[in-house]
Image 1: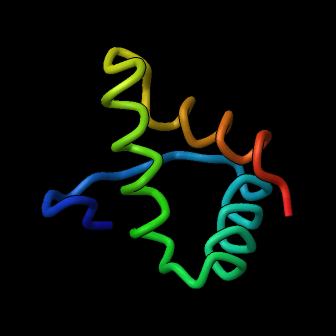
Image 2: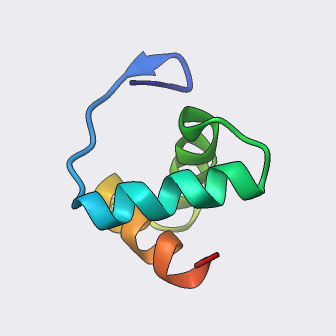
Length: 64
């Protein structure tokens, strides 16, 4: 997957991928766009946190 111009991989449980896809659809965003915005927020607030952890927290806070 490409996020903000660089390739990255992201290991998440199927339930988190499903939830991310629902959230992205609800926001009319692509999955890479949504993950890039999560990554951007993570980089500003907690740059040492892992992207996978940031995504899991995001999903828990934004369930559709």
